[in-house]
Length: 446
Ligand SMILES: NC(=O)c1ccc[n+]([C@@H]2O[C@H](COP(=O)([O-])OP(=O)(O)OC[C@H]3O[C@@H](n4cnc5c(N)ncnc54)[C@H](O)[C@@H]3O)[C@@H](O)[C@H]2O)c1
Image 1 (tube, rainbow, N blue to C red):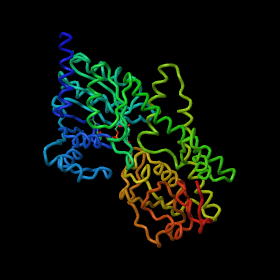
Image 2 (image 1 turned 90 degrees about the horizontal axis):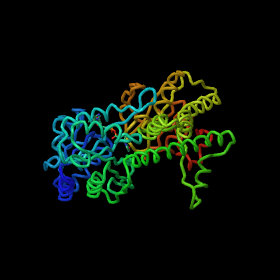
Image 3 (image 1 turned 180 degrees about the horizontal axis):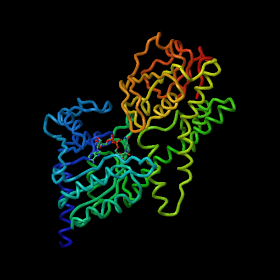
Image 4 (image 1 turned 135 degrees about the horizontal axis):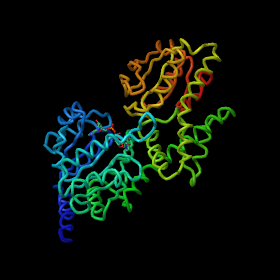
């Protein structure tokens, strides 16, 4: 193909995107994929969603969301008007002009990147790749994933990057449960493997995101996403370590963080908690540690933060055991109510939640467990844990029968003063009891 031919291909896709005639395919209908589906639909694009889970596909096809953060009322209009279709038939991957990959990137049992979802997705795309398609990886991964893992596989079709097809990386910054920032308002870092890949990607995201932040290469974009998460992981570990020291010194760490937070420059407050949760902060930093080994480099901050954060649920359990001991009660046989099992406030997701570790440790010590979480009526089974529990309906009688209640997640709709009033002992890992003056003797911060 001549130089003119190259320009034509990228201009064609850019033109199609600008006219909103490009069909947008999104692979992985999860916490990241679904908000993107909505965003593109809202701007008038036709969207084709892909997922391997046929039950999700059947629901979404009818415009019914399965995530609390995405009401069905926002989705159904697009399904009804034929702007949104969802499928588990991956042979349809030849249809979209732009394909965004939002599949999971977890860790293996040995804490190494588990790339099977990206690899399977790329294999499906490879089989159906056609001229003029733009492929964008959104899943979090180590620097080099786009160019070292994905690019050679797509080029094995004989199609040429930047000329026949376009490849890019643009990390998702979704923050489930955060109502202050919508997908549209969160600036989006974008990069492309070649200048034409970059241009097509830039055009695509400018249609749906208020501010696009271009960087020079996919490796820069990949490391940017990891830096954001490592920054959180390290700072959470720092404040959690100081929490344990402050406790020994008889100082309330929350009061300290709040006071330090009044400094108008050079300090961003991070708050202590029961340990790290979710499917980003505890996982993503280890993608970089793993890659760093290839460069004879040890990422010591990541390792240290990981060690401290993994230890925190054990610390919380030791505080529960000590508090019961003070009241001449043993943990064996103690009735303990866990308040909040979601990994963070006001979300309906318990994956990688520190509550699961705390519950497992308490169960192994012989405690009888109940939990209450308004967002998680039934606790599902996980790869490592299965509790077979349902959220208990809270009554004064139930609270009185407990030996202790442990606040693990600070959901907004829980009435904490009422709980403190009726429960004999409260272990508070989130400082929800900050303004409760009356029953101080019942409250142990952990
Ligand atoms: N959830 C967040 O807050 C968040 C924020 C930023 C980045 N991320 C990153 O985004 C990526 C996706 O995360 P998520 O939270 O949306 O995950 P998720 O588990 O909510 O959704 C992933 C979806 O992909 C589907 N899936 C799995 N394998 C597939 C395959 N081979 N083909 C098609 N679909 C497949 C699953 O059925 C699921 O519906 C991860 O890399 C994650 O680290 C997540």
